[in-house]
Image 1 (cartoon, rainbow, N blue to C red):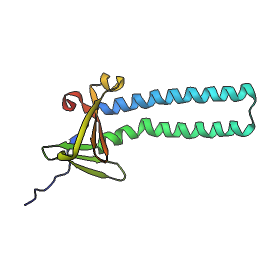
Image 2 (cartoon, helix red, strand yellow; image 1 turned 90 degrees about the horizontal axis):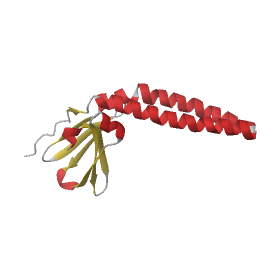
Image 3 (cartoon, helix red, strand yellow; image 1 turned 45 degrees about the vertical axis):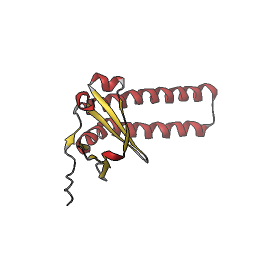
Image 4 (tube, one colour; image 1 turned 30 degrees about the horizontal axis):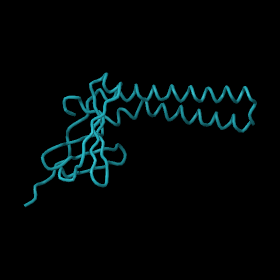
Amino acid sequence: MLEEIHPPQNRLSKNIIKATIIGELVEACVVIIIIGILFYLDYLFSWKDWIGWILIAITVLYILASIWSVTIRPFLLYKNTRYCVDEEFLQLKTGAFIEEYEIVPMTKIQSVERNQGPIMRKYGLCSISVKTMGSSHEISGLPRDVAW
């Protein structure tokens, strides 16, 4: 008789919102600096007009994507990611618009890695990467004591 598998209920740490926003802002600053350098080079070397228009289009698209990444995505990540670990399975649920459920049998897991960058360390968070023979699964935003 098979036991019923319940959907995962454990949430990520609420600090994942702050860590994600800070990470996205750092990335946006670096990209904006690079785009600024390209605009300066366009001005300095008088590149063809169409290159300037492409730079403007890239800048506008990147600003829109950055607004999404900083204001909406971190909250959706926190609200819609769940996990559960027991003796038999690792269960993951992700996705705001298209929900994705993954069930990984513990007997198939080959390795587990724990990663912690400087921003995640500041907020006491870790990222766990679970590898099986054919795939890799990641849980980002776990409290440090849970990840150990």
